[in-house]
Length: 140
Image 1 (cartoon, rainbow, N blue to C red):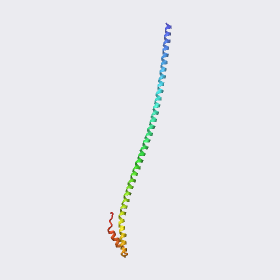
Image 2 (image 1 turned 30 degrees about the vertical axis):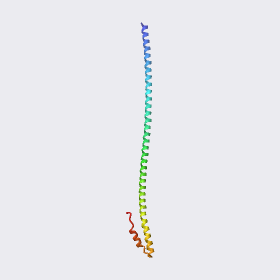
Image 3 (image 1 turned 90 degrees about the vertical axis):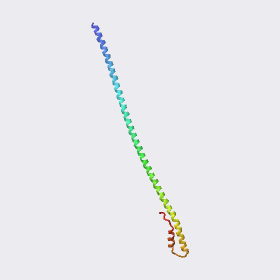
Image 4 (image 1 turned 60 degrees about the vertical axis):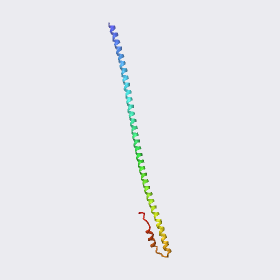
């Protein structure tokens, strides 16, 4: 009977040792799972950091593009202003040319009257000049 009890106790001890080994193996597997989870967390944090850096760079690129657009719009406005000023200058120059062309016949008439007056032997050119300006039409 004692022999049977000893055998049963030894079997129980063996089974308990096997359960302990299994528990230790379970602990090791759990520790491995924890390590893998921590590594996954670290990788996720690194991915977040890279994404944040990429986002910052994208925002910087957007800001630079917006600045370039603003500068280009300013350049366009300045070019349009320059064109408008050039058109005004052309209009003024055309008006001056038109006025100058209108004075040519008057000057020719004045010269003709002066020559006519001189050919009659008089030095009084003022009457001829006055008569010539009576025919002049003002552009205004």
